[in-house]
Image 1 (cartoon, rainbow, N blue to C red):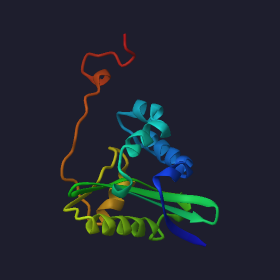
Image 2: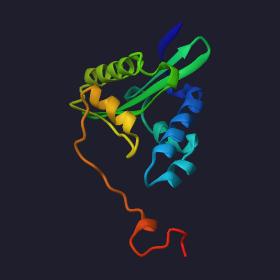
Image 3: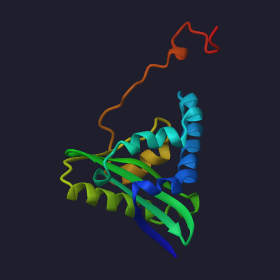
Image 4: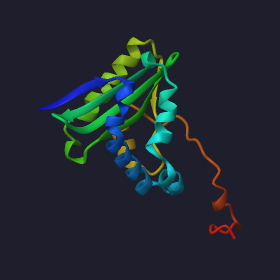
Length: 159
């Protein structure tokens, strides 16, 4: 039986394999920053999560008995809330579980007084953008990061 269960930050390691699958998806979808996702480890990712107070963090897992099939991680910083990471096993997509996860996390953020709720989607990860659009999230800003090896006249091999 599929359950959505909140877990404490101390148990975040249970989502490691799921997070790694999400990171692989980002790597495959990335247009410019494959190198980032190739070197981005679970340990690096949870460093930022470790700095968030427990009261400002919500982690919900999707499980079927002992098997972990998805998760949502959200955080609150003052009046701002963010869906930091969301993943569902491919077999569960399209069943409304992602919508339910985001709905629970949005409600939690609103209870905490958030006036702004956002989610970041890596460029090229179009299926995630489509999903968030279906829930009423839309692009407000687009951030650009300098990628020196793609500058005109630069040899991408570093020579």
